[in-house]
Image 1 (cartoon, one colour):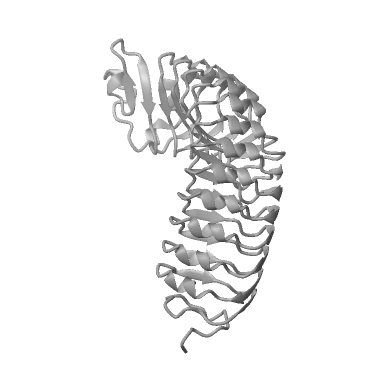
Image 2: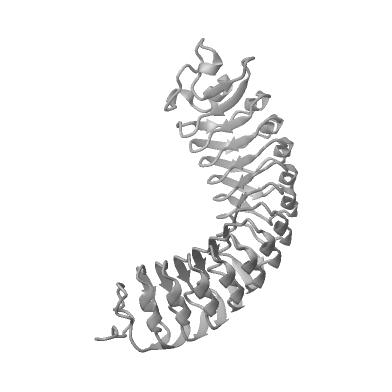
Amino acid sequence: MTALYNAANGRSWTNNTNWLSDRPIGEWYGVTTDGSGRVTELDLLVNQLSGEIPPELGSLASLRELRLGDNRLSGEIPPELGNLTNLEQMLLSGNELSGEIPPELDNLTNLEQMLLRANQLSGEIPPELGSLTNLEQLRLGGNELSGEIPLELDNLTNLDVLGLSQNQLGGEIPPELGNLTNLEGLDLDYNRLSGEIPPELGSLDNLIALGIHFNQLSGEIPSELGNLTNLEVLRLSDNELSGEIPSELGNLTNLEVLRLSDNELSGEIPPQLGSLDNLRELRLVRNELSGEIPPELGSLTNLIVLYLDGNELSGEIPPELGNLTNLRGLHLGGNHLSGCVPSGLRVDFSRLGLPFCGN
């Protein structure tokens, strides 16, 4: 504990009450001990820690929770933390940690949460993390990680959140991720992933949010994604996806956000999307969609944003869109539309160049 105070500039902490004093360690700020005086929890979140994490922390054999997130810690994660075999939570997000993730962390077989997001970590994701079978949350987003997503992560069958966004990960999305049937959140946004979206992701029955936008994905959107009936957010924008929008997406009746913009999608907008009663955002901007706007979209009365601009849509604007009284953003420009804008909509259409109906 003395090593942590000295290595992390303890004199400048927001709260360092009783640290290095004669008081029992359990009375030091952020420290919890058991009946034998052994440290079981170390919680110094948002406490102005700076400097490095000392390797001596690896000697706290009874530690179950290590929470040092949202500070200014730098340097590498000590491999000695792999000695903390009783650890259940490792929260180091929001620091300035660098270097690679130590493969020695595979010894933490009791770990349930590993939160390392928003640092400067580099190198590949160690495949050894696949041995942490009690892990429920693995959040590594907002770093500089590269290489491919390890296939070994499919062993993490208790995982409910896998966050790998805002890195430099490449290669294909492993279809083995479809084995993680407890997943509620899968966030792969802002990487360099290529290849097709594995249809196996359609097996993730508990998934609530799926984010894969800003990558280099190609091929068609798998119709199997229509099986994800608990899904509330689907982000596939800014890729190179082609083919038609699967009509099966109309099965996602819990969906609130659907973002498919900036791809190469073609064909017509499926009228089945009009069944998404909970939808608040529908963004299909800058694709190659054609045909008319389905009047069924007028059933989406919870819709706040409808962005269809930059396609090849034609025909008249359906009067049914006048039912969208909650709409605050409607972009239809860059198409070949005609007719008039339903007058019940309280949205600025000055860029559209079409009159309001009845004017």
